Length: 474
Image 1 (cartoon, rainbow, N blue to C red):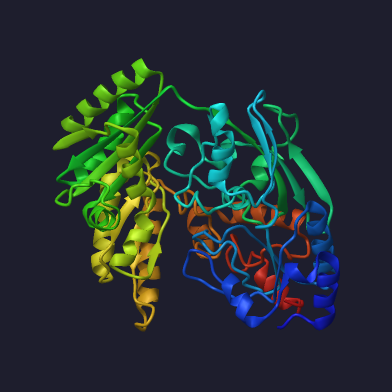
Image 2 (cartoon, helix red, strand yellow):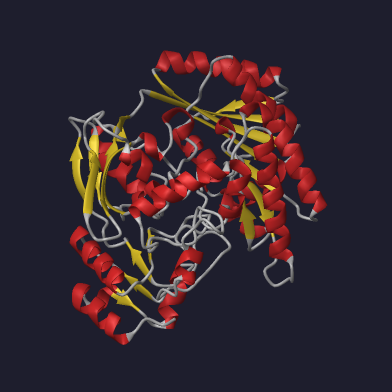
């Protein structure tokens, strides 16, 4: 239902007219993220401080309005979609780096700080922020915390939760909590870890303390080229068996690398069945030794060629191809559905074969670009939104792929989150008892079910149906 005039007036009085959007034409811009789902909010607000967020949350609670936090809207599982309408709290104006503490290798940030801007701010001191999603030029640290985002270089460094040390967060009743801090470890329960990856269903994060890492002495980027996707997939397990852990190990199959090469001219071979993009960092001597070992393993597993980037420019070009892969798909299909299942490294080749078979079954030309070192699969399922049933076909294929990932010991998401996209698959992965415990935790933080309803938990256990049954204002 439309937001009442009295509520809008209160919002404008609280944070200013220029920080409130309510016109239908404006709201349409906030009805979607990077996925395929959409739903209109009733109002969008732009706080500039924690105090603003507290006031907004209290006002929403007073009028029984659902709340959804939003970063840059680059998410891929519907995490920032306002399924119940209500108020979207967009954090784009809370974008200040509050502190850079090089001596202790820490930074304190507002949630609207763009991921890449953290590294750019500390680069002059010889540091960087490790988690680097493909959308790092646009995505924000608040959204990264909500979804526990990953990225190519988290194979060695870990995902967002491994680099977030402390949080300030506003609870559903407007109270503020602080968890963790600059210390390496704090006593008590790990509330920082609990909130990181909770997808905005437990609290609204307003301040983040992150770990900074020192830049490595040497970096080497390699491209292994294959005539078989099986050989490329098997290489990942072989590298692990040799005890070699690159900082990044990415894979693209033939259809994907041809789309990428046409868009970016990164130097990928057009006739290959697959490539592995491998990066090493560390002491110069160690990197040189590891690169020799990696080349040996790749060739032993069937690589026809192993190239090494000869300059920073060549390295940047190879990564430009990988990081712009999703955009390159537009040359073939303007719309696509991307999945996010995880499998053990030893199951990558088998999973790629299964993805191809599922695609053929549903009449979809699937391509793949993914974090091979983590076994985090990203099959791309193109569809035509104007063709009746096409999206449903892609969704059905995506669900089969995720079920296959579970069947070989994997999971339904590695970094995109559950959101509204995968919530009905949660019972395929977790027991009834585990889901009940998750529900109880959610209720502990958000008893009135106002924070991001209709996410994570399957129908019957989540907040959306609870709010609807109670006749709450949405």
